[in-house]
Image (cartoon, chains in turn orange, green, purple, cyan):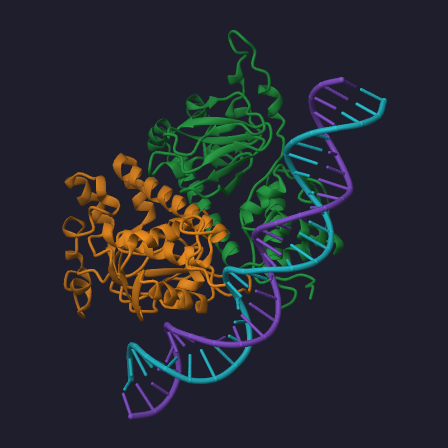
Length: 271
Length: 271
DNA sequence: CGTGATCTTGAAAATCGTCAACGCCGGTGG
DNA sequence: CCACCGGCGTTGACGATTTTCAAGATCACG
């Protein structure tokens, strides 16, 4: 009756935590003349190798840096923006994490994305000039605001920047397709495994341990995102734990057997 | 036991048929010197108001038109490109329709998108410089090939073109989010209703009847796309027919009660 | 230390998938 | 022209993964 694991296919695209170091830097906004929030510059940002200015020359980074607005940190649960707000900017996550919530008609909200440091928020607002979902901080989170009209203008003269922008959108499209596949063809076990593997990969890319991390989202968020009831998420995590694939307590995750987890995510194993 | 309809929420993003008139124009490729396949120009294309050059001045359309390659029509079942082919171009659908198939690992293929006339194919290949899925014609289909490097170059000097490109990608992102929502939270009935409503809207936008159209895809394709077994698709279409929401015979669809269909898609009605 | 949010676990219900058989349509070939 | 064949679609019955409902347990924060 009970399957050890389940399987069929693979991957997904999700996103989580990582309290970046730069949280400190901007975390207290002094009264009067703002103590150079701006001193956080792209040139010194530890994410610059992952972020939009990735391919730019130093001089060009300066131009790019000049159009950025740093924002005071968002606290857990605060909105960066709300669904249907007019589109003005895209945002790069500096530290912390965000979720995107979309509600249509009356129905409840669908969690359509998690955003981690270096990722761009808001690209899906360009077309209709409004944001298609609300963006909410999962923890203390800092973002860089990039006014889109100025970014567009700048991308005219900086082919590398333009290219990076195209690539960011393209990557998001590709990730979405993976997610479609996950929701359409994967079992609950495969979804959870995919989710964990994806997180692991994203942490690795950012220089964090791919084996130990803290989930910044609740079980309900995970379930909402993966198209599962939160109880199902909980149950399967427990089972993965029994099977020694992971050690989970609360939101702290340790991946014990990444290889097997990957094969579960891919739908190999049984069936 | 049997629910009349089911419901919760709404929308999706899919695509279908419409044998454009320009199919004729390019449909026989004569031997030697090619009978001016090129005579199909953006300036005379009936889709120009929906397609990339949408916002361009006449002169600029000429520049754009100059980089386009027209291709001989694809026959039903033929590949426009295959998954993992190197990314070189994006394609605008002139007539007919296409589907995108993505296979990962060993698993079977997931149908991730349908493409209708005026829509752009291949934008999700920019990032990794390979196409993330195969593109297959659902019927006789003609496309315009747009080499991406030249498009990118041209977009440097044509802000409207650049903008339109951003918007196309952004729209696809937004549609994907809708689709995520569909797969994640909607019942089978809601999915089918969403699918039909979405098709209806897309036909309307293109000047075709939103009430009568022909599906260019098989039930299996619809099921694959919506994350349902093809039997489920069939059953629910039958039920919709009983309920006088639609009249379906084979691939011919007549929408009888669009309003109710929309409310089913939105998840209103019961529950 | 208490209170509410979050998480876990159990049992029952239900939607949907799988298996299977049958019918329809179009095409091909005799 | 008719018959056979294969692809495609329909319908039924059964089974099962997952949801729902419910009750506790644990955690986090004040």
